[in-house]
Amino acid sequence: MKSFLSKYGLLLVLLLSVIAFSEGLKHDFTNLDDQVQVVENNNIKNLSWEKFKAIFSSTSVGMYQPISTLFYAITYQFDGANPFNFHLLSLIFHLLNTFLAFTIFRKFGIEKIYALLLTAIFSLHPMQVESVSWVSAFSNLVFSTFYLLALIQYLKFCSKTQWKYYGLTLLFFLLSLLSKSSAVTLPLVLIAIDYFLKNKIQLNSWLNKIPFFVLSVTFGLITISSRESAGHLSDLSIQFDWLERIFLIAYSVLFYPFKWLFPFELSVFYPYPEVTNGLLPWIYYAAPIVLLLLLYLVWKHREKSFLVLGSLFYLLSISVVLQIIPVGNQLTTDRYLYLPMLGLLLIVYGLSKSIKTEKIIYLFSIWIIFLAFGAHQRTKIWANDQLIWEDVIVKHPEVAQAYNNLGSYLLQKGQVQEAFNNFNKAVQLKPYYADALSNRGNLYSQKGESKKALADFNEAIKLRPHADAYFNRANEYVRLGDLKKALTDYQQSATLNPSADTYTNWAYALLQLKQTAAAKEKLQKAFSIQPQFAQAHFLSGMMAQQEGNLQTACTHFKQAAQQKYPQAMQALERFCR
Image (cartoon, rainbow, N blue to C red; front, side, top):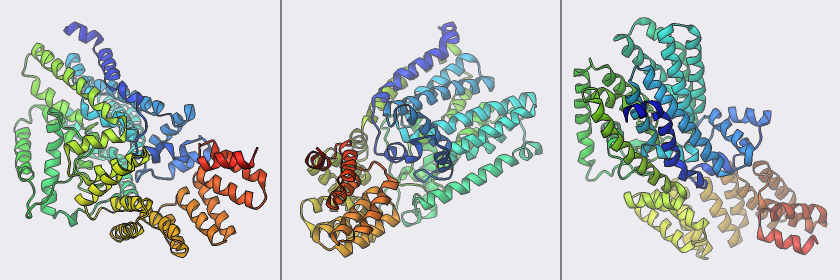
């Protein structure tokens, strides 16, 4: 068995990875940023110089990741927004990272059989599913690719002291930063490698990292700025004081190794804990004690170099996602372990050297089979938003966001009452949840319950002024005939988040007030955002038809009808035979 693995092991690992994750190739896009990053992203729809500049001068969902977006653009050229191609792209990068992980292990001097077993765990672990199966997590894969390439070049530089390898390390680091800012940890990881190789850190180790630190600081500032402008930075001081946040960070550091060892109850969403009577759950208070004990044990056995290297690699690479600067509304997430998992694997290698190789092979083989099955099963959850959020609700029934997101998906599928029930549950769990209030208000509006609808919209806007709430309230004002208030809300919505939908409805309200020129101006803005927006084409067609310009009207009707817009198909049949 040992000779077979030595000869064909890497190929077998790659084949098992394809089998484990292949289910994801059938999946559609999710509503978890996939629509924004791919389906509706005009910057990726062609590879013109203008779009190239736009990609490198803009952010996507609050992140500066132009290289990742450029890969989206290249993929889009083959068959448009075909989800299969984007899932295949993610799988290819994961396989590439699997190969690079094996290369790294070998560069560290790990025996081939151990390197293969560690690589298999890295590639087949169920916690990697989120990065591979979620199209919007693609940046996680890309930055890891260039990060690993940088590490390989640096190890070459350390062994051969040829400056071309130093230059390549810096180049791959820059590409990694341009893929995702999580790469900022590389300079410190390189210093950890220096310590691993030389058992000390010399002045030169710091000096030759200066260009790396300059890049890290630069991209770190860019990330904080883009996250803040996108509204992704969370003010945890409202919910937790600084001492409690220290407990949360310590818990997060331990959460990932524990889930890695026991990958049960994995979830797309892990909520912050509830504070009851001024206290966190006991496990959070125990976390710092356990963490300090583990760090003491590592220090006590610091002669075991892989134990130290693995611990440093894990702690440094995971540090940027420990909510020290809080982002989003969940404490931990599976995809954050994608690259730091290499550190945990180095720790395992350091601990397992005292066990006979044959026993390790059998133990690891059993674990790898278990992991591969778990990854295959976990991949199925990512088939659609309903499965994703139902899975979260089973594991964390107190998460209001899960009910709100499930409601949004069910609404798209025409299951209005089920959607309303989920929005209502979200509001019950979290009465100050602005998005859920806005969504529930929209359904009250559809039921003709304007008083309840406006109450929800008003509360949503009071809690957090956001585009959707203003847009929904404006639509309700239009239904009530209060067009002046509607115009004010459309303007607020467009200011916060310009969208084709907002400008089109705004144009419709202006038409009711006989302000035709202003309506046309808003429709042009709608087309500048989404050139093929069916509703805008239909409204433009109706305006042209009323003005007697039948040829222009039919052109717009055809554009809308091609997207199966019902009213446009009827208008095309009626006016354009």
